[in-house]
Image 1 (cartoon, rainbow over the protein chains, first blue to last red):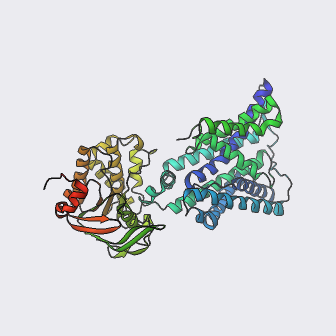
Image 2 (cartoon, each protein chain N blue to C red):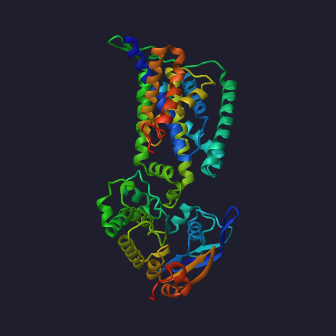
Length: 290
Length: 239
């Protein structure tokens, strides 16, 4: 029983990062209708950026996060202006196809670049508090991962508030729902797209920072994170930042449970099974709108 | 004043407009009638910047709109209520209306315009916190018109505002258009409800297969035997 609770706690902690990783991808997919399969690589790059800031400048990883977010947003703005801007000119079906092609190209490029720059070794940020943990009645909660989860939740809350309250946040939601109607109200749809992509990339960078803090990064982790994010999006549906976060936690817990019940080898299978079941039973996602 | 000159538009190989010229004066209500697929919606989409014309010019207050993105057209005072209303169904009535004041042109006067819209449509004031998707068809059309008014247009274009609404609701909506026009907004109205549109309009154009085949004062077009036969049915009585 204690082992189960322990695994579940670790599952929630990891699931929060799944949720954060998916929130960025979900925003980009929901607003631009492009599927950026290089999202995991953006997470990977964010991780290395944070790793560099921590090891070279001696910053605390949570301070580094404050730099990673604007830097990642800038990278996102560049990617939009240089590549994705040309994709959103097309109809919805063409957008998806073209974005898959561009995304795979980007993913390979970023991976190769990362191997070149950082070698293929696994890295992770070590801090004074990395080894510390809270002991609660026999189960252990690693402090760094707990802080990461809280930061992820905070970022999701900020995203939610921005989309609800801010002028451009509302413009992004309107664009996601009906871009033609949005443009007829004076909203610059291209700008809303660029902004959404920059925010999505910033969220990926933040997720990467937290991954390198609590877990580890290497140039090849991208695809795995893209897959997790996709599963979470299918699980949660589009249109709600908190829903996406909860979807991430559900996936984390399901993986943890399956590891306990079937053994670690089946960890990855359960996510794909969930993916399949939700697609069959509730295609709009658990919290999504049809 | 809006002046469309020799406009050509096409979707791929399919010609939608062929040399269309129309004019809407700054204090007019002008109706555009014609059968399905005549090119009415295409004409409005071209003016709004949603569809690029192949040839011809769209002059608004002396300036060519043909190359501007839709949000730039809105900033110059031309608003469009699209067919099917196209509300943001997951947002409240007030959020929908507020988004209409997005452009720099409209933002400073947001609250004043909002009060005015609620004055025109008291029903919307009652429902301001409800989701737009949960309203009745007539109320949704009020939101769509209100949202366009929030952009503070000098020209308001409407694509089939009466579609799917009860006759009584249509009547009150058309009354509102008259009121809006009297407040100094030009109205360009695309309607299937030909009789109602021609009754209301100062002038009208008849569009067929992408060409203007008739024009004149609303009552004149309504009296045209061809129009009566095609749009009002063989049994239509003389006005």
